[in-house]
Image (cartoon, rainbow, N blue to C red):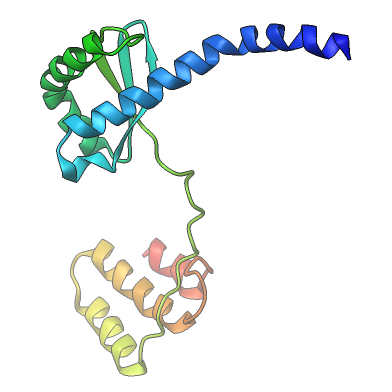
Length: 165
């Protein structure tokens, strides 16, 4: 039991820098939300504070651009408050990181089935089209509309003939 008591100060001493840093980040996050416009407040979060640099996470690149232009005024306001609070460093600059959710898997393309008359019109347009590339695209569209529920990547018997001439 004596070893447990002697270990506690060592564990707490090791955790103290992390707790202080977390407190600084939390405090700057609170202060930042007091400074930024209300419309931006829910979309900006303090990720880190290191060597006088406030690292912000945003959800979109456009937001990062806005921050780049507005951050000098924010730094002045944040530093004014930071001088009054104990333990907060003076900030010299702001960096932004775009912190989006993990990319989501794209669903496969689903083509609607075209009606027979629409497919016929597309084929007729293709026969009268002088631009070969556009004619080929119209024929491919007519065939894609025929497969209905597939991904549109299936090969069609007429595609290779159409491509060659």
